[in-house]
Length: 610
Image 1 (cartoon, rainbow, N blue to C red):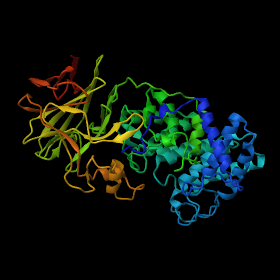
Image 2: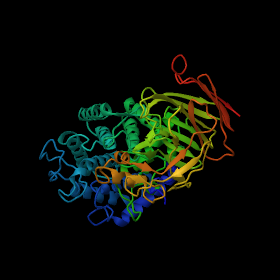
Image 3: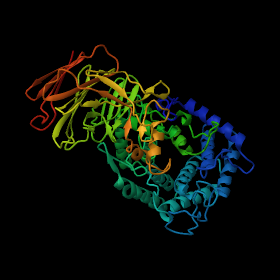
């Protein structure tokens, strides 16, 4: 079974003017065939996310006319714009809308669904989207619409902005992408207003960003991020926020948008595997955006010098939003407009700088969470998630049913690179059920093809083992599919175990249930509203790779040694000299220093290829 939303890397989509002209030509043909006598360009199956969609198609037709001067397009633009202004601009309060600060304001807004009171909660983002479609038309429609129609559209766009920033609470869904999109709409609108009105709107937009978004950023993995639906990052909406930050910087030139975009881009780069797989988020776990991410990933890949375009997007939305039949939908059309207008080219090579929360070389990568425990391990084309045992999730030694991976003090990291090897040493203090403080040292070494992981800890009672991950997905090139297998070797006995219980809180990788569906089943709220990350934390047990201690370790240590990926025999040897530990494998010799570190407390590591 393939994962629906993680398909090809977004930088593999053709990225030339000719390719974009072909996209716009297809949109134009679909729109001309769809245009109703009333001027409606909505897809016939469109029921929700509807308030901006016809206007979105109009904006694409304007851009197509700019590039081709197709004589069929001016009339379609004028009729469809008139339809939006006549039929899709609402001024009466939507019954049941919970986020108004001013009632009966008479200001225009766009509806998420057309029926009054049916589903008003989505009106705020729908109005943001409608504002963005409107300012795109204002930006590009010179010579296509008359002054009266232009003046009416400008008045509606200004009303959208006032409804969003005055009549309602700002960002009522706590969705960073929507909030930054609103700011972008204000910045773009300001350019069409006479001074001092334009300067007032621009100042208000930047103030909202600083006070309502930037001041409420959430820290994760050392980065400050715009919160998304109550969490730090969502793998669907996070890259969309990055695109909004790119457009905000393009429009305003304000350095704060570039700085915050750089931080978000480096965070995405660190959590993303080399193969472009990612999962996790407070709104979706596996759903990935498509063209909505391209602008931000492309713009900031150039700024930070890394191949962010490896991000696996939903290429069914590779160019624009579509319905089930593949027909174009105007929702998100503004992002395609900006994507075509922006001339930035993809940066296609990985960054050479070491990142604290990532180890990456060749086809091997490890993304680390805030505790410096792996959140994703990629090797031999297989993606491993943290496994679960007794409601505890992660990678690390298990003793008496207790997983030793949560730090009880400072976590220290040392990165090292040779001509052929890349390594990361993570040292963290941990406490088990016996309340004894132990030093957990985890060494990750890769040659770009295989990954060697060695974990050393003071002697544990009983029969400990290493929880070494949940094999979950594998790379099929242009698709990602489910798996329950892994190319892995261990110095001690190795087992692939599956949970015995058949219940929603026990995840068996052999089943066809995806991680996202399982996470939503465990979440407190319905799918689309619940937090799948919180739901997944309720998982009791999962499929897991379990490795016994390696033979030949020093008497006072338990050492676990595994290799992900191909290779011959694997018989590592270990030597203890005072507080130092030497590890010899078929690929390298490593020396790990005192857990206390050097005189400055920094971890000590030597690495020599063999």
